[in-house]
Image (tube, rainbow, N blue to C red; front, top):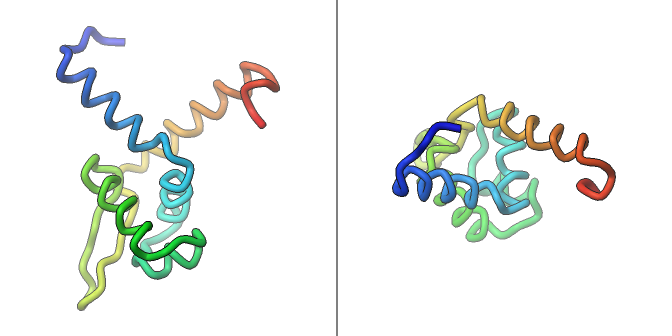
Length: 103
């Protein structure tokens, strides 16, 4: 890893905190397939629209998703396809670490 400034390390940590919630990871999995609006995501994730909106606001703030207006409705999509690779690397690392690392 590169030597990063304290400010850069704080930004990296915040990015990982944004990914540190299972429901946000579930949202990102849905958005990897196609764009969805808040209502569609709420239905698929079994959450309220308000809860999904809060998650999407955080994911948008960290550049993980993008918002696009279609008429009067906002649709969200994955902002960086490399996120899928990052999550896959983490999963593979956990799988190599043994059964205690994965449920």
